[in-house]
Amino acid sequence: MNELKHLGKTSNQPVETIDLIEWKGERITVRLEVADFTSLCPVTGQPDFGSLVIEYVPHQHLAETKSVKLYLWRYRNERGFNEVLIDSIARDLYRQLRPHWLRVTGQFHPRGGISVTAISEHGERSYRPEG
Image 1: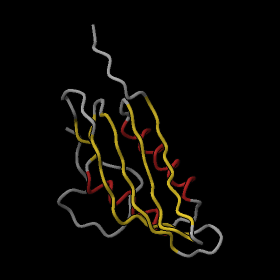
Image 2: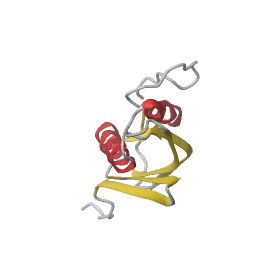
Image 3: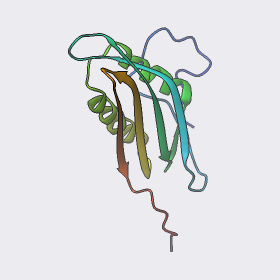
């Protein structure tokens, strides 16, 4: 098993990488729901509030959830358009986890009467029996 750097330890700053937990199970879909994601508008610097859903089919690793929370914390002070941030998070988590498939959905509160939902998906979700 990989050494867990964050679980059970005091955390006072965001992180750039998530902790991985070894996975040897069957093909399942994992769904992480984040109710309080925040980032900053790239133009005004005002906070954008939303929720995220991270879904993935693990290959060799699971994402340790405390480290995911600390990873997402780094976006609290990051300026970026909602769509760009969601794609960046999905690409980064896909690179770190190396799952069969991963999708990140961000649903942001309305600004100017328009809410944004951005979805970024990577990999192959379909199940194909081996052999």
